[in-house]
Image (cartoon, rainbow, N blue to C red):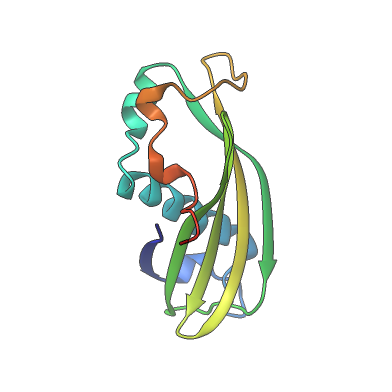
Length: 135
């Protein structure tokens, strides 16, 4: 399952050269991951109300090209790994055919004390796991 979101680069996200400040890419990726969770039926609000959380524990990001003020960009997100209490979501930011950013974000499911814990069945939605290859 690939989730996609389009956004337009806003002026305040750019440096004095008109390039997106590198820190803002993390905001773009966060927004797209939250929308990915919504798309796959993961109820983030209910998870928080139940006393759980999802922590980002690692971000690997490769900056390929700069995005510029007023660019229309597409952010794609999809799962590449899932364990009992953690997983990895891959993400890509594109401007047309140009790859702007490639990232892998490792997440951990945590209890109310912030300790890693297995996903309870009600939050262990099937599309958190990568799709199996055909065959």
